Length: 402
Image (tube, rainbow, N blue to C red; front, side):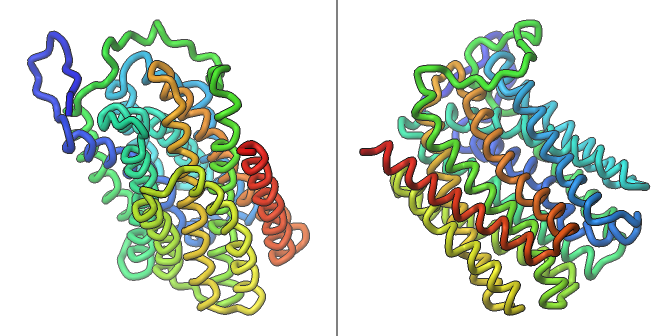
């Protein structure tokens, strides 16, 4: 594999598969900050005494951070370089972990979630583009497989770790973040030694921080299908994240924090495994199959709630994971393929704006509607919305191919 070198530098940078592993660890580490708090929310709710609506808004603050990062910083790594963008992103993740570690009230949670969202938003665009350039494959399938699978691997491991600590060890609101901070230090050390793939990095003075979706006109029609699919895939994950814990606690009467972490671990691991196993499946087939599987996925989740069945919930979790994995991997691969080299991070960031928006809507919507009309009604409404969306997206892609 041909590698880029850094001019006028005496430092030896990580290259090849080691560099790919370092960037993959960065993406996984950034996303780990998203779900490390998932099994801890019920503890925060009891300790700080806030409502379900407040909990929903705390989650929404994370999405706000995502969108701010992607809108304002989506092009930064195309200009100043991948490494010089990734290091501040990891520093912000570290700051988020420290705010969680010393949190004294719900305001601290808002701040920590916003910081986590900003970190993930910056790291996602820069890291995905970095992998595509390090691997240098024409179809970008390997880069896409790694970027998407480590994303969910990070989500899985952090949720499981936090759940086990919360249930069986001391200091449930501190120890997970101490471990996470140590892991981030290791990632920062690796990233600081990883080769740069932007040939002539510039300075911040060359960056425009005006909000810019940055999808070049020549690829906009090709961008619509993967963007819609990415929105749907992440909406499904958000739907499950919103309903899964409530089904466990309210319908199955399972309050074990480790089980809550393990349930999300199952979802994320199935997503990651699906991405790896179906790597050779064409992106179009993956997108269409993922959209089609969204329908039985949400039906199974609602049935698990209605019948209070753990077995149905486990099957629903796996089905959601397969549907999300296929839709996410297939759509991101298309985006990597069509993105111009000099604008790659900006286009990838635009894709993730769609994905993160999809991830937020079910959580916020279910939280609001459940407060006003009850949990089952809220879940059924959003299940129906996702079904309609999936059918519309399939029709859109089939029509476009004809």
